[in-house]
Amino acid sequence: MTQTALPEAPRTSFLCGLFGGGIGGSRSPAMHEAEGEALGLRYVYRPVDFERLGRDAAALPAMLAEAAAFGFDGLNVTHPFKQAVIPLLDEVSDDARAIGAVNTVLFRDGRSIGHNTDWWGFAENFRRGLPGAALGRVVQVGAGGAGAAVAHALLTLGVEQLVLHDLDAARAGGLAASLAARFGAGRARLAGPVADELAAAQGLVQTSPVGMQGHPGLPVPAAALHPALWVAEVIYFPLETELLRRARALGCRTLDGGGMAVLQAAEALRLFTGTSPDIARMLRRFADFA
Image (cartoon, rainbow, N blue to C red; front, top):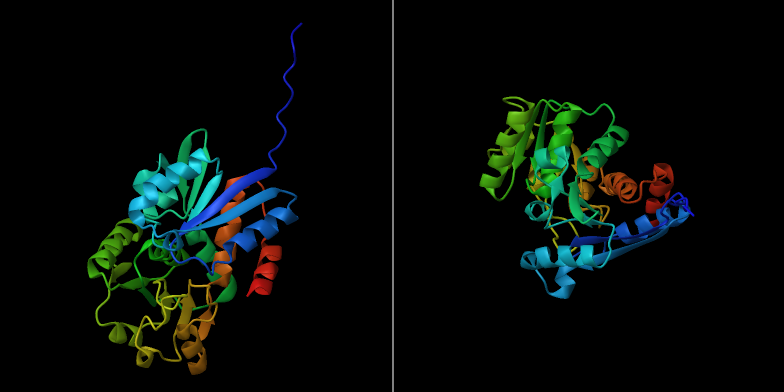
């Protein structure tokens, strides 16, 4: 007798996680698991802190292979691995390849696939949080993995000239050249003295680790801030960085990194599970976590 195959039931159980260094304060696990529960999923999300484990980037290939072998469905990848992970993957989405950074890895049918949800998360958070912000000239601090995604978002949003400042000038110059090749000559360039650049700018975006938990301080001289600037952060722990505190005291319009954290996480969760999260609910819960 021929047996009829039963239709495959939709998956409701997922194991995901976060790879990074110094991520003990991350709200991602609580945020992901709360939304997974609200969606009726058995959704486990585990942080893997390389610093706590005493491991560095040299351990990334083995750790990535182990996650796949242990049955993880996907990983988020944060500082300092968003660029280092790319050559370890079997496939990379068009957006992630253009940006040169991956923050979301899917494991499917024995293959690892990289995506970037950071750029959309920043762009959507900017639209919601700084409507009508002037986009003539913007200074961005940081040209690493998060910086590459945010720069892509800013030029997509319509910034006319993006000025890139990084302690590694060669890295900033390389990112500027890549952006100019994709978005047009003159749209991105390497910064001169950052105080001079800020004096002529309408916006400042901070994407370096400076200001996050374990990396205190200011990414630009305090005296270079002025009330005509809007100031946006990608850091969300702490939610109010020293930069944002000083900018608000001057009367600047500001945008913290919380919205970007939620929005990029929502898109990552969708990729991991195939289920669309409730972004408004995630934003409300993130506020409760803060």
